[in-house]
Image 1 (cartoon, one colour):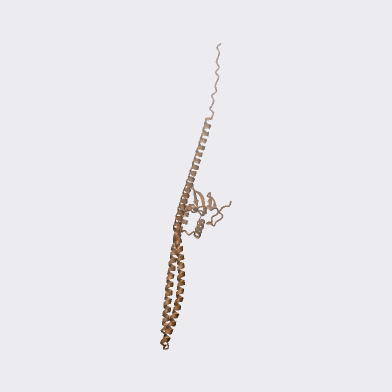
Image 2 (cartoon, rainbow, N blue to C red; image 1 turned 135 degrees about the vertical axis):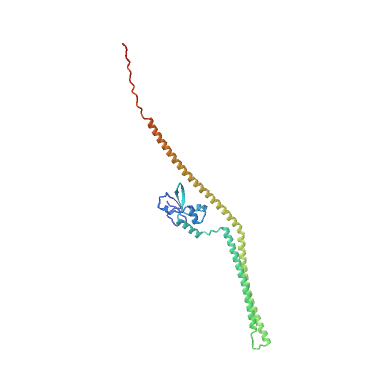
Amino acid sequence: MPFEVGASQKDQTLPMVITLRGDEAIVEEFTYDSEQAMSFLGIKRSRLNQISGRELRVARVRRDRYIRPVYRESDLKDYLEWTRATATHLSSSKAIEQAVENLDDRFNDVLAVFNQKLDQVADEQRDFIRTEFESLNVAAPTPSPVDREDEQEKSLVHVGKVLLKHSARFADVRSDLAKMSERLESIHGTLNYFVPELKEISVGHKSLRFDVDQKFTQLSSMLLEITDLLGDLQQNQDEIALRLQSAIVSIGEGEDLVNVKKPSRRRTRVRRGYNL
């Protein structure tokens, strides 16, 4: 009969729930009880009850008077590997808060880069102006006052062109950073708008999950109690059957004693004489 095996288990030859009599060869592999499985996986009993038979293979074997769940080490390792590869173990509210914090950090980084670019452009402008003015003071072969004024005028015109070029570059950088800042502010506002609703959804999900786990735990406890009651009932039935059988045997022996034939007395016939 075909059966489905969860993606968390690599062994596809066995079903997810196995009922063992106790004399099978594979029973030696199932050496972990519930407490040991919880310690191995680092989870609570409610979670173990939830995944047993669905994502984690479990075997049921009679121990003493009860049916106990047992687990195999290889199945526990497969489940751990599967959960590490697919789960983040972060609640939705924590993930949202972490995303907001990361966005704030990125926004602060962009502002820091923006200020750094501003300082860099200002330093470049100051260095260029200082270099141009220093070049005007280089010793020349006795220029006349008119030539000196012409050189200064040309230098100032060149400095003005360079300043205009750097101003245009600075304006482009400022425009790009302003657009980026507006975009980040929009994303930040959107996240802040949805954070309360997402938190409410997370709280509702946790509450529903808690209710489901609680109901499942109650059902598991009821199942164990029913199993115990059935075991006690079976034991009582066996005891009643033994008593009934003993009573039947004793009644049979009594009937044999009653039916024993007693020795019969032979009646002798007395003859009476006649007087003649």
